[in-house]
Length: 217
Image 1 (cartoon, helix red, strand yellow):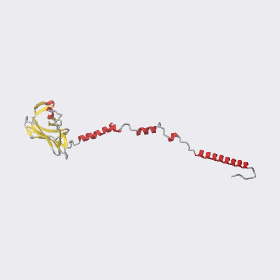
Image 2 (cartoon, rainbow, N blue to C red):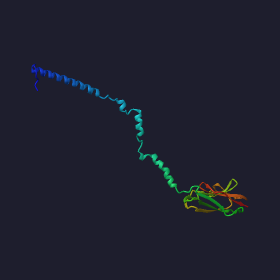
Image 3 (tube, helix red, strand yellow):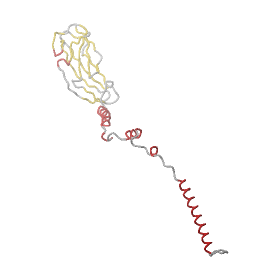
């Protein structure tokens, strides 16, 4: 492409170059303005990036961090102990599951003759259960008024245990002889029980029977 006109060719080329330079300058200026206006405003680091020194962050981390290995937590182990104990004690007769009964072999006796007493523990529940019927759990004693004149524990104290499985309705019994003498603690034997009304009681654990009345003439 060659310029045409009355003036020399070099003049036209200089004009064209000048126009191109001017256009290029304008384009560069406009480009700088456009790109400089599009730069995003820097985000303040204090609001966008939380600092670990802030109390709320530190508290959150502390709340979410486990304080110990859950598998080794002693509180978890302790919480299992009541369940284990309940399992071990399952099947034992409670006081509501049994009854205690004492029966004298006669309604009256003479001074110095004494009586025979039958002591019975019965499972009154609807299912079988285990009850300690050892001598350490049992006691037979005789009262006159508010005075205890004799106890099977006074001369034969014991801690022996005898856990026994009792079916529903099953009984366990033992016979005891009272010789008619007053006996105190430490097996202090006194005189013969005198004429009057007496009541005999039986105890198994914390469960006490109703009293059975007999008379000494």
